[in-house]
Image (cartoon, rainbow, N blue to C red; front, side, top):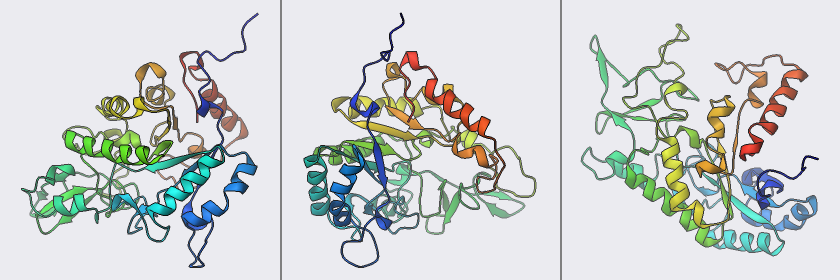
Length: 337
């Protein structure tokens, strides 16, 4: 008789119930109209009663809030609207006291343009941090200055912003106040490991990693193929999603940081529906992450080129997506979020 036991050990995070908290709208403790860390602390018994095992906080770092905190100006401080580091310590203590764990949002594909790293980077072409971000000179067509390539931002217009001070463009795959970090620079990667250690040493139990599959861009940053001839800027995820060195970088993260702790790790992996591509981030033999968020289920009701446009879908499609991801490479240790 076949065993009903799973083929890989049942790690604690495989049966954990994770509850995401969007801090700004969860619970306001001081009456200023914005949720905060002390508000979350006040609801810990409620969360425990719900059966929550892991509390995942969306970004609470210091931020100008151009993208609801996913534009981080200081990775080692709490945004004042949410509280202080002392408030975070108190929240963590309360979470652990109730037998739960706390997971932070790790946003390291990009920073805020108000981060000290970027302020230094844009100060001069000769600044030591210039290469911490992705800068390119403009190209000129018939005398007209254009961005380095035709990549479209995920949110709006060009993925490039011109800096008059140094007369070059910086890459921002999201809003212009979110410049992309240059992960090809090993010093940048070391700085990211230091950020992770800061929170782990403080007691954090894991990370949800924002758009972690786009940290490696195709060398040369070539123009994207034209799929919409009504506009100049084109979707370019084929040149930045699941790039050539992404697994090398996450394996380095595993060796340098993750392997030394018993953490929950979840990677956000947009622009990808191919299970074999995303499994590479999760299969135990690859020593990277515990699991990833895939977007195939979410994308059922929208065409790939227009994520905010409604598309009809069938229940059979939803069942097929869920079934495929729940069973994919189970015997090799793949785990679906």
